Image 1 (cartoon, one colour):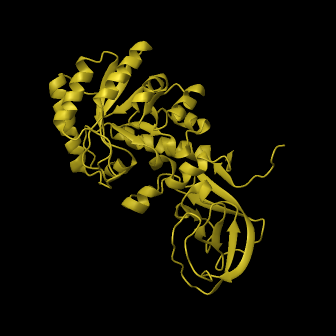
Image 2 (cartoon, helix red, strand yellow; image 1 turned 60 degrees about the horizontal axis):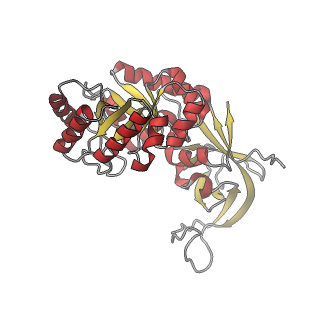
Image 3 (cartoon, one colour; image 1 turned 180 degrees about the vertical axis):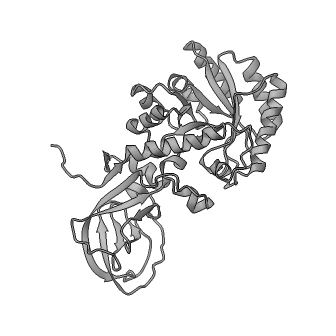
Length: 364
């Protein structure tokens, strides 16, 4: 039996996605920066990846080898990059589906070199420098240089193509011009000992885009790993006050069906303990309010704070595993059971929605 329900649904506008890719590529081209296009924000959907390839990005990048494999199987010819430090146990798979990888452990570099040799391949590597965000990367310049020398002189099936960093993902450290210059200093220290210029100095990810927008990105930064900055165009204005009006912020539209409309108390009645996820919440008492339940929940998007109703006057006030609770008291239009409500999404919800088997994908 084939289920016929159309909802919940994620509508993907490939034209708007392509416009975003091309607009971002133009900005980066003007600043001498190549793009490693990160596809994990939409779970590596092949039809979306094709738009990146056709736009001419330098790399298709993901933290998940499965997504890179899917891209290869879809006949994507653009080079692929693994942006999560690889597990030593997946070295063979890594060199099969990734042309380049970010690295921060000498033991892993040695294993990847052996795997590449066994397959008769040369695998590109970018060594990561930790500038204080405290995720991946060599902590000192001396450690970075040691790894660079080993890669350059001893690991014959590896090609050291660059030095890069990550900022803002764990330690919330801002990608300032000073941090970019610190990275350049470390890269130039590596260049001094290996006796040549590196192809890439990678200034980070989407969190480094404010340097481009503000016009103070140092010249030697020439590679960025960009995912959500292209896909959603929402986080940078909200968190970094960046003007991203040159991008579409509605590439993705979440659609969910209303299954109940009732006027109810806005504060739970009874002894409050914990919700279905073990959290003890607080609730605002706004009196009796008209509410709607939509047939989608945390299982599909994780955090209800990462979905945004498009209809004015509709507010997401909570969610359980399979229901989203909406306050529609002040909705600009009358809603009824069976109506479809639309939401904008951001990176956090998009990762889950695009990977959910319960959410139907529709391309326009």
